[in-house]
Image 1 (cartoon, helix red, strand yellow):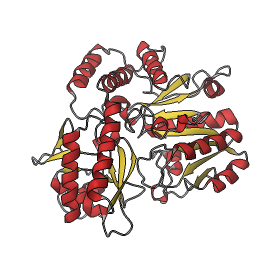
Image 2 (image 1 turned 60 degrees about the horizontal axis):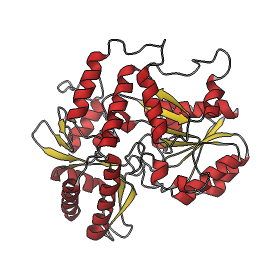
Image 3 (image 1 turned 120 degrees about the vertical axis):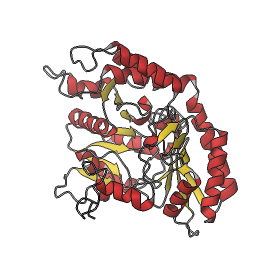
Image 4 (image 1 turned 90 degrees about the horizontal axis):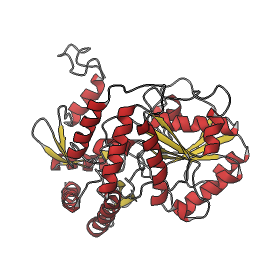
Length: 417
């Protein structure tokens, strides 16, 4: 596809960024450049108001333009005269790490800070490889772990890597329910880590339960394989519990727990990039514990003071607003409404406000058409990248009953078109 500049038309506004994305948005009537946000709503530049059921891919867990977050973050910005500084362990970094460990129930002892979710996932794999001395990694088909180089290959959809002429030989994929194939892979004792999403963000095809996740943990433990929970999307309240592993009941089963948890999207309310890996002392020491290795792994912006302050503010507001409980309650309400109004036509997957809608097999429903009809009706959602026949719902954690009812009414209209 040629850009406007290449085809002799007017220069694209996105010419030096991504004119192809601009063309895509224009063709579907989705260009909302200049949009503004307020709470659970987006106002497009043309005056349209949309209920935001995407929340910046799940980052805006407090909604948009949250007044307390804005005030406290502005104050932190004004007080931050030195932001990235390697010769310290900032008090705010210590405080945020301790807060995350406390939220985990002290199941872990160390926190490694990075910038993006993909960077943190790759860091966790790096810790696993170093600690086990093994080279290979297993992920699941239809998963999503980021789009940096190695994370792209862990992502279980060839769409993201098919144009690359090189493929690593140490990344393997299995179907989420195929324990026989997984057991065969782990029996080789070459697998450093298995990476899984307790509640998937870009797929409606993975459904982990307390039983299947406990079986996964036991299999990893029996073969000396590290288990990494990628909670970049579902962690920190979105799934109706502070961590996705708790939302699916994984820790209700004895000794069923991952070795590391990766969090990111909801950590700073969508304001600044920040991610973290929670792990135990042994895995941390395997990387940093040798002489001369105190800074062998790091991230330039990973522990910067402003991001640390933002993380502390957001966790304060999520906790004081009881937004984790709200996510669980609103998710349960959406589930009831879907069953009552659309039972036999739509099925809801996920936990809390990390949800996916799929059409029932016997129904002739094109979810891409539903998506566009919802936007026309005033609801912003998005197809799942790994399962385009499904629709992702990841609204802010401040979502309320009124928003749920509005969503249901608009969904009803979209399905009748």
